[in-house]
Length: 320
Ligand SMILES: Cc1cc2nc3c(=O)[nH]c(=O)nc-3n(C[C@H](O)[C@H](O)[C@H](O)COP(=O)(O)OP(=O)(O)OC[C@H]3O[C@@H](n4cnc5c(N)ncnc54)[C@H](O)[C@@H]3O)c2cc1C
Image (cartoon, rainbow, N blue to C red; front, side, top):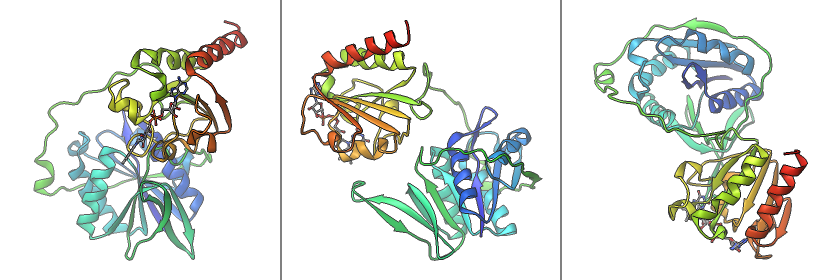
């Protein structure tokens, strides 16, 4: 089995999501390669070896400088046609979704997306995909090769196995229509502190906080624990907290070591985004709230009383 992993990068670093998918591919076995496309990306490619890539193909060209999909589809399609891969894996991102969809069309290949796990059954790749509003997980396969797969954000953690990859430069040529789109401007959202995708500790707030002003309760607890703040869709839709912090089916998938849910009911669409957390703590005044069915520790109580006390306790234990 041969697998190619699309290695996305930003500011000279391979993205955690791509490294997670690469680590998973290495665990599944067979020949595992990565591909880095960009301009001046030779250094970036060498970061993939420790995460399980035996070979990293580098497609380095000025036309790949901007994070636009079409030139990447050209580069990947040529590589896949020349070398032949059974599986081509992507970690979900706006760019990866565009590239994977364009590649599927170009190669007339099947693409399964939003996968939350991968396994080998009878020597063939099988994807796991949530369905029916994330209430069940179904097995999905492919009828042809290459099998293209987009993996949901945060599904696999990067695991260093200590290897090193051989780096192979690949020539690029582009279709006329692939280089006509130009990037005019690129903006970055400024965020303070650790992001929810990378945080070991997340304190999440729901509608039970009662209003946007009460998010200071979760912010204070997150600060005391050195963690990040997340939110439910209900509060994001109400404009209480930014969309970038939404956890769940239509938000981000997170897997911190500790997830503290404050005033969150635990709807299935929220649960699917945080059920991979190490330890889940819920604070909710309703003993029948669904979150108590899947949390590890539950406190039945009012967030306004419990959360400040918890913050105080953490601060005093930390000696400050
Ligand atoms: C297609 C679709 C996609 C969705 N995607 C997402 C998603 O990505 N993420 C997401 O989060 N949701 C998503 N939802 C919405 C989801 O179904 C829930 O409506 C939402 O998660 C509820 O948010 P909540 O827990 O903050 O609010 P509620 O369900 O209103 O729960 C508030 C909780 O706070 C408790 N409470 C109230 N006052 C207090 C207090 N003083 N102290 C302690 N507890 C208190 C209540 O007992 C209650 O359990 C989606 C829905 C659909 C249909």
